[in-house]
Image (tube, rainbow, N blue to C red; front, side, top):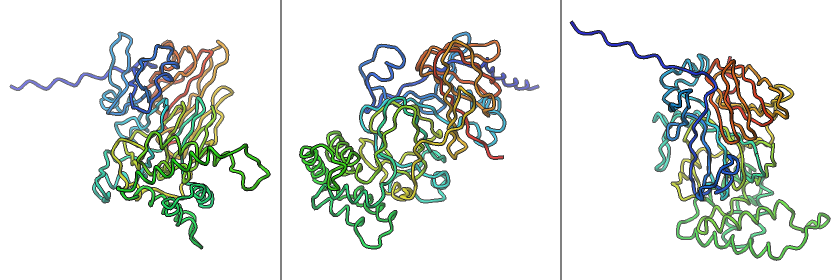
Length: 429
């Protein structure tokens, strides 16, 4: 007689919250000091670009149990999806945590990139739509993003109006840039189409002449900046603050990427300065690049990135030009929702995520908003704070985080301090 197979051992869950052990990505554009400063430790001396908090398969967080055992979060989600995520979240997203929380510590500009829509990603991944060029989608998901600035943060994001782009390109008066600007000057040109065409000319500039175009931009930007006096708001010919910042960033990009035509990107894309406490939502189709700063970022849990340039990584220009959308506008200062006197939420129009900020100014315990659906990641940015659910509590220092599975709320935070909570967005009825 054959022995019956043993029943699988049930996965032990909780108690929530559990401290997370989070990877730091050492990308070369990262700050050598910002994350160490947040976490109160000695810098390693190497770039530390992104603190990841989530279940991304390439770098999942671990959960530290009461006995000190660390379990990979992605494996736990796979093994017990409905218990960890909750039935409603698991029914929509399957056995995957739909969001990824990060702290970005940007010391040098990132690549200029675009993310696809959910429909494009799913169709291309399944082979139901052809992606031109060599690019292959690595998962079937979209990758919208929301950033909250902890310190002043500069971002290139979304196309400028055609008139603004034409003015800025006109400052850099050389033959190659006149070619890029030509679509913007055509009579009766559609505003969106002409900016997209100028962008296409820039990213597809002939390989044997790319270095020369970048050198033209660098030389002209340096010369213009060197010739400028104080801005006179009453003089229509005076170069204004926005144009000066575009020239400065073009010059900086040329130092980091001397052979890349996209050093001219600040003339075509909006240059956004996020002051601390301000937010930016980047939807599908919007070209963008983080330039400098420190920010909390939440995004859909995907690896679908289409790069145009300003990078040493592989680019996907053909597919990027298929999905880039000149009509798409990033949302600056996403409307906030007051959850309590202590907590505010930002809920962009995606189901994958929302972000809340809870500030506690005294040692009096404060209850977190109890009606978030599904799992949560709780990040402490100022502390220490004590995070508790029922009788179980953990202490978080700045730069540490905790995971709370579905059903682990309500949460109480005792400070003083500041925490951000990542959770799924408003789910469809």
